[in-house]
Image (tube, rainbow, N blue to C red; front, side, top):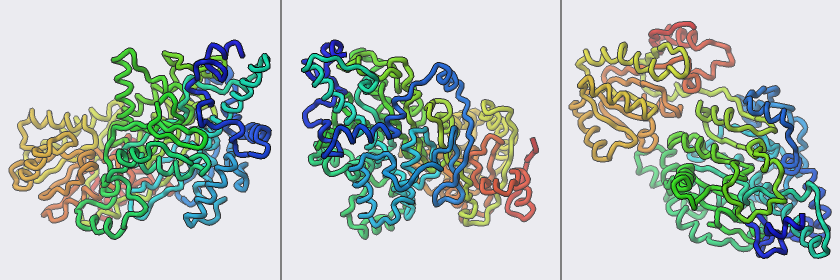
Length: 626
């Protein structure tokens, strides 16, 4: 091993590895948590941690073959903490029942103590039974996690920082344990090299292909500013004596971004009162809306370096678009590469609901690029790389944590098809309260069901139903003020082309429509010069327009975000004959959220709609039993 180390760049050689812990100011074996008996105590604590047991496990070929089958059997359920309508479901053995909440939950001692101090300093009580302590236990199991009922920070009065703190602590624990392990082994290798000895054993296999171990995907720079700031706050004081490039980070990410703690709340509230936009829109888009960013964070003993080179970073915080740009550049220019994604062991996708409104295909592309064999060596000591990296099994050791406010078929597909962690999966299952009570006007809501044979045929079946059943009524009517709400941009383009072919009178309001065209179209629609308006969900998400002069609302495809349904329906206020028609199929189960609360009563969707039609809230057309 020493002979290989001389050529590969471990301590004592002329070339330093990017993944080595021997940089100036790096965490050393004598700089660990147990200062009195550092090596012995750190080694014993590490051996008992889930970090060590997860990374040291050796997969058999049979286990690898089973993981490729992507068949997940959820065997157990546990009620979610402080969420009576939710429960956790998981594969394998139920680890939550065996957790001792009074232990340090696998954290490094100094990190655990600092976490408790920050929690109590913010006014928190009963730390051991807190929500963030519970969710950290789930993260610390190193299973893949899907949490789709996270309260977003931009909903006023519902800020939920417990989930953020839990995964930030998990990230810090993983990074600091990795650096301690490498630094301790570097010291042993250097001692043996000086004495002419030879070291062997699996305990010294502690490297990946490259240094970055954690990737955090976020939608906006203002959210990244908040997450990195919290990451620094939860880092123990000993590891953040100096923070490099903090001023640059604040200027680039925090400019007009998430409000600082010192900002006057009265001034902010007065700004919100003057704006006609909803408060959640102002909170989300009132800051730095840049969705093209990428930053590396490196822990170096007693200091944190922001804007570190990606190959020398421990954590990479990026937007999907920022990473896609790097991936595209590496495909075009041969001298560039993205090998810093080859050794990601923890992937966190936060605010997945906002990323869905951007471009979720970018996330799929990024995940597909993770844990691939690198094209260059990058100075790594190949004699100390873990065997499962060399065997191409890194994807089975990567933990993926997906967080969002609601479930989506695309998110579900990513979780089932691309998250192959051998530890298993844990996901949250919830009954939604529904949003129909938020419809404040007495509007007649007509739900028309169309038939589709499979999920692949849904788009065509929806389009054919609209062309044959819905559009002829619009064409023969002299009534104007008809707004068509569409969830997908592809459906938007399809309907636009169809209306052009029918020489219909319409205007467009989509996410890619120019502002001048939007203003002109809104005036034409209000004055009756255009009969139909096409309005996309993403346009509503990014602008929250309040469209006037709507007489008839047709929801071609239900919105992804459930809160948009009552917002759009309430736009009918002031019209003479208020009516709303919704097209849906049996494959819209994730979006028909207004009926999800009835699952507990085991009432079928058809019967539920029929009951409402009897009491006058709905008129049901074309509802058939399968």
